[in-house]
Structures are given as structure tokens and as C-alpha cells.
Length: 47
Length: 357
View 1 (cartoon, rainbow over the protein chains, first blue to last red):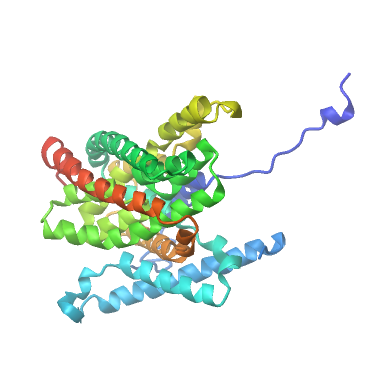
View 2 (view 1 turned 60 degrees about the horizontal axis):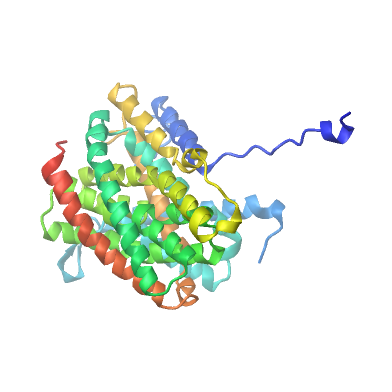
């Protein structure tokens, strides 16, 4: 018989690697640009 | 001094805000200088934003260390993250046909360069009596992709933290001058944009400096340099796998560590997938990261943040800790890498697979 302790699942904290984070942030920025939030008619980001 | 964990996000945010402020300053300086004639007849427009960003980052580095503010906020300096975001955004302005064409030559160049430079550095390190783990980390860093390769190799061979820090410092110390010298040499040799870009991708060690050198030389050079370096980045999983295998079966037999093919996927830089997807979306006409667009501006901002961080993260004091033998090995290998990469880039991108934009 499994003890109560054995049945408790230890929840792993959610972690996102830097690589996937960069992909997520880059496509978020692309989406905001496509929607016009960033750019000429939105928040100015001229370079 | 270690800060209480609850305060860490706060200190990181301060570091991040500082990076944004310094990047804005770098952008302003590069704009102001653009139309000026500088001493020694240097035209202002020859000094592009990567140079100003790195120099301003170095100045920020010196000030922060003098005031003892560096350690608490350094977690906000995220060179690799900003660089990867910039590279994905760069993909949004390159047609998939160009990526595919350049990738063919880039894979060939990467295999030739990684193999030749790794074994040259490994052999030379042995002649200078360097420890195997340091040789492995250094050889991977110099032959593949600088800082991230050093970290991946260190995980594979279980290297000491100070060995990684040391190699990382060497990478940045040599990459910063190369970022400026390589485009100047390419200009003196009148290299075509694609050949120059492939050369930077093959010889400059860290991806940030590769992009910087490409940006200084020209738009097409920046694209080819980024594709070539990203291809080398993509091979880090294979190198990490082979290193783990070698150290587990030959050097550290008692460690019991065995590599799996899963390691190749773990080490694969996923931002490359983002770059390819962005390029596909651009080719389909769904997004536009071409000249004068918001995505292009965001790409330049991301790169500027990365260049500022590169200057901020430099730590020359690390070099004193391990003596001059590793420095000598690194510098000789860099010269070998530079000469070989020039020949290979010219052969592949000038003769075998010339790219037209």
C-alpha cells in the first residue's frame, strides 16, 4: 500500500527557457506592430 | 553581496531600466554623430550604433563598478535575450528563399569551421598544458558561438564555474574589437556583402558582435552574418552531445554521465525556429519587417539593448585569475579562425553558393 506521502505530487515551478521567452516576446512585438499599437500610428519606436 | 530574493526582481528591473536609458543615449549619440566629420578624417556615419552602444555599455560598466552598484543589478543585463529577440525580428525582413540559399552554404561553412577551429584550439591548448575541461569550454566557445557555447560545453564536461566565467570574458574581450576591425578589414579588401557577412559569422566569436560587425558593414552583410552564425548556433547541440560522450567515456569514466539524443534537442537554440517562422510569415506577406517598418525599428532597438549589455557585462579582472597561457591559446586560435574563415567564406559564398539579394 502506498503511503499518503508517496501519493503527494510535488508540483514543479513553471519555468520558461530564455530561448522560448525570446520567441514569445519577439512574436508579441510583431503582433503589436501588425495591430498598429507600436509604430507610426501608435507608440513611437522610431530608430 | 547576495541580495534578499524578494528584492531580486526589483534590482533586475533597475538594471533593465538602466539598459534602456543607455541604449537611448547610444541611439542619440549615433544620430548626432552621423553627419559629422570626426578627428583623423573619420566620417561620423562610419561609426554605426553597435559601436556606440558597446562603448556606452563599457562606460556604464566602469561607473557601476566604481560605485559598487554593479552586482545587485547585473541580472537585468540580458545580452542573449535581447539578441535572440533581435534575430527573430531580423528574420521578419528576410525572404525564406534567401534564408534557404544562405543556409546551404552556412551549414557547409559551419561544419568546416567548427571542426577545424575546435581541433586546432584543442591541440594548441594541449601544447600549452591547459586542463582538459578548460580546453573543451574554450574550444567550443571559439569554434561555435561564444558565450552560449561556453555555457553549453561547461554543462557537458562539468567544468568549473570560474572556467566558464574566464572563457566568457575572453570571448567578449576579443569580440568587441573584432566587431569594429573586421568590417574595416573587409572594406579595405573590398569584400562583397555576402562574403563579408559569412566571414564575420565565421570568425567573430559571439553572436552579438557578429550582428554588430554585419550592421557596420551593410544591410546584406548583417543578414548573411546572422544566418551563418545562427546555423553555427544550431549545431551546438551536436557539439555538446559529442563532448559529453567523449568526457563520459574517455576523460571522466567514473562519473557515470551518459549523453542522450534528447541532449541535442535540449541544447538546440529554439530562437532559430522563431527566426525561420518569422521569415516564412514575411515571405507569405503576412508580416513586414523590411526597411522603414516598425518591426525593423524594434529589431534595431533589441540589438542596441544587446550591444549595451555586452559592454556592461565585460569583466577584465577575470583574465588575471588564470594566467596568460589560456589567453595566448585563445588569441592564436582567433588569428587562425580569422584567416581560415576568410578563405572558407570566400570559397563558399563567393564561388560555390553566391547569394544575390
